[in-house]
Amino acid sequence: MRLVNIRPTRRTTALLGAAPLILLVLAYLVASASRHAFNPADKILPTPGAMIAAMRALVIEPDVMTGERLFWSDTFASLERLGLGLAISTLWALIAGLILGLIPLMRATFGALVTTVAVIPPIALLPILFIVFGLGESAKVALIVIGILPLMIRDIAAYVESLPPEQMIKAQTLGASSWQLALRVALPQVMPRLIHAVRLSLGPAWVFLISAEAIASDVGLGYRIFLVRRYLSMEIILPYVAWIALLAIAMDWVLRQISQRGFAWAHGAR
Image (spheres, one colour):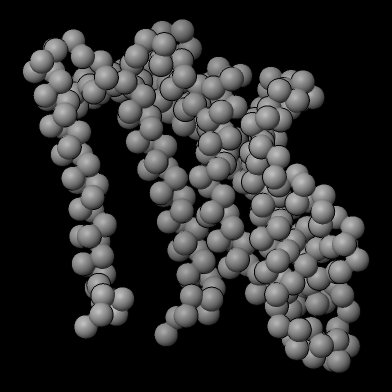
């Protein structure tokens, strides 16, 4: 039997997926124990006990200045910014992608502009965003939108353009207008692709969010990481990074479930 033809069961897939993570955790525990055996004051690889003690103060104990639990304040602030940026990007990617994909005249007019904006490093625009929008929430959300929207538009437009022309011809033969082609033919088929584009944009969106929070913010996961880095507080940085990873994985899982349950035909459902 060829290796490419081996299909693991769901249980085997779960075990295989968990194995590298378990090995990574074990490797960290061994390395941390070794460093602390040599230097008990080591701050690079904190022990699990040190991370639990540091996070307990952020998760459970209210801050003496604000009265808030900083970990949850950071989480809610970051998720609010990220959610708003993703929502705006998704909506405009759908609208612009349908227009560019369906209407050749609009594609010829604005396609080059979208491509040009897509290749500009969004981080390079951060100073401009802070000058235009100030240091408030608008600049952080705008960085997420500028960072992921052009690529999402290009992906959706290319997908709509690649739809079978026979569908468009048959719909027009039956009297469909351009508006009806967009809503009745293209939109139902593009929705799974839109969710896929959002999933692919989650990683870059987190990068832009953390970057914006690190430069100008007083709350947020990125802000906290860059605040404590000057003290080499790895017992806080590592749990925060792990928490960001868990949030990203959870968001990706939710989007995947929505796509599979809402558009089973796009996933080859039996």
